[in-house]
Image (cartoon, rainbow over all chains, first blue to last red; front, side, top):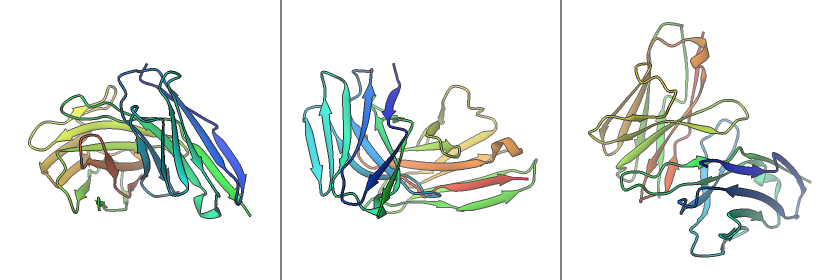
Length: 114
Length: 114
């Protein structure tokens, strides 16, 4: 019930295209859903995050769509660029009063081709 | 900003020695810090959660006597890998809570045990 399922495992998109990564969860206690971008040999960097009281959040070329009833959320990268080539992780957490532990998806390796 | 640093970025040590990794939040105070381990092409695995001034909470299966965590202040946590062996070789990443559930990650430390 603590799992976050992420798909696809890898994705190849042409420059200028839309990259879409999907995640699904079971635990309805999750109330915070961030996306992280990780380049090889580096730590994950927070991209964008959403709470379940909104269905969509947009920051620049990155958009999170959230479907509370389906327990699914997705990341859309508009106008994908070669510099977006990285591994993307979705995650979910809930605050226990002392800490929020993130449960990560398995990751999606995105390659944006010229 | 929310900057988290780690030191060292890379360390190579001989089997049987101990290695200390530092994690600092540079521009904010973090009540909670987290330590993760990441194997090549895999997701992040939470090892432990540490709160300033109290004992760390370890995830199931993580040996607390092997991975010693000290959270000395609101800006510093350390992970000591004791009596390291080749199977401890991995990418270790820390993160820190800035506000309730937002975690900011350090750049990671690559540990190689010979």
